[in-house]
Length: 73
Image (cartoon, rainbow, N blue to C red; front, side, top):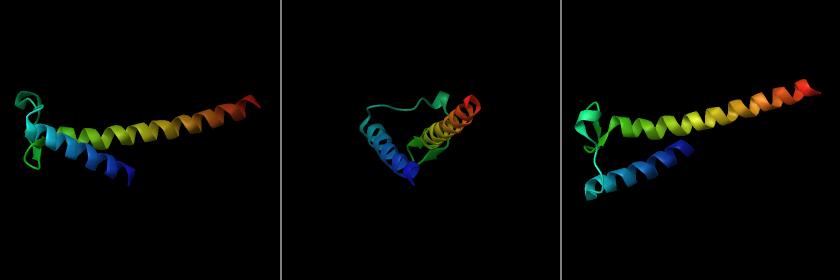
């Protein structure tokens, strides 16, 4: 759910910035699949994968820190 909120906010921001002309995506650097006609699939996947990996890394570090503190006792 949280990832969906982040995705909606940042995709709306990206869509607005591209439509306004504040930035663009170099066609030579992307695969060429667009969402909503303006945003490359790589941009959408970035806002899905990065938050997911942050959460998974955080959970893994919590688990590792709990198991290492048990080893010390």
